[in-house]
Image (cartoon, rainbow, N blue to C red):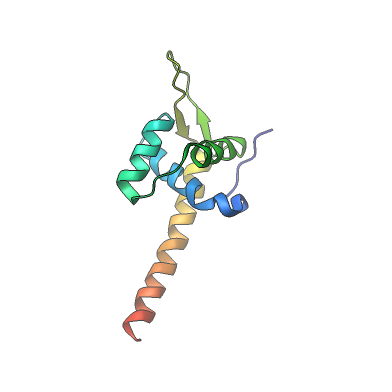
Length: 107
């Protein structure tokens, strides 16, 4: 059974999961397109095991879902729960970044 929820339970796979969600926020993509987008946006190259492991965990949690396809590539899209989780995570990162910048300015 799929469960919604935040990104927090992904442990060491949290960063790749956030990058996958961020990529899919633009629209449905298959694995290679996700990996390429992540590399362009963040400069991070995810290996196949890391990428597909993150995709699998996100799918199991109901944060992304497979989209029907007529070829061998399997595209995925962000679910409403995934969008909510990404928004929350990005808001937290924004708070951390703002605090960090403010503290560094005083250092």
